[in-house]
Image (cartoon, rainbow, N blue to C red):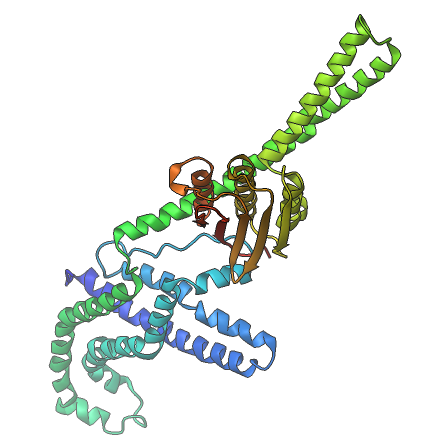
Length: 413
């Protein structure tokens, strides 16, 4: 670290150390008050709230410290990349408490509240306040009332009080070197504790994951918009057309001629309406948005070409990206069962446990499925990986085939 011994550098060092004192004392008071309130209120449920707030105290403190480091520390101080998290306070708090950087910043806050501010205070007292008081001593003694310093006038006349002025000047001159060195050492400690410990590649990977999560959310929002537009626009028009053609057919004679043409048009309109309904369900099933994953998987099993036993107990609403990934994973897996397995029945089980959505699709087919061979199973794995999920496949020759999908997710508030 390059020490700046210019006038501005000394002033910045002094300001950095001096401002650390009230910050550290404030952190100490907040820690004591919050921890005390949390412990006192632990017998009731509300006692958890102050303790959770205390664990996140390092986040704002670290933000302030990174700004203060710019006064004395060359180069930018990298802030930790945090996972994106929408939702209420409770959901954001749980996400923050799972991040290593939150505890790293809390540890720094505890060190600041117990030791670092004391170091700052000692350096400022010894390097600035004490020599300043020594230099100003003759003036202070001369101007002080006689009852405060009874022998002050005699001390000034004798020159005894003037003897400490050169000593104070020498200490103040030494402070030009001491303050930047002390501030630099202090800044190195703060930088080491506040900069993320990860390497550059891992930081980039975190940012890629955050970007991918944003893209998934935007993609799901666009899918739902297209589904609404098709449902409220083209599907309604085709429904009206089919009704009009049905009325026209009843008023015309059957057989050849206009009646036959209207009858054919009516049939084609109903087929187009059915195909459009399938397309809308493929884009984003309305039942998934309205009633959740349990109902949507049940509807999916009802429309399957073979009997499917459904055992779902998700019981809570999850983000659209997680529900959609699970729904289409089951859809793809059941499609593969119908086309390739030779099974005569299947089973779908879904559970949400400890922040993870678990879905299992099982069939009694011939087995031998290969996830590495491409096709539907690899597409299923790709769909799950987009939302941070994984897919495990067990398919020995002769069966049964079991597909397990694991998607980490937080419930909606």
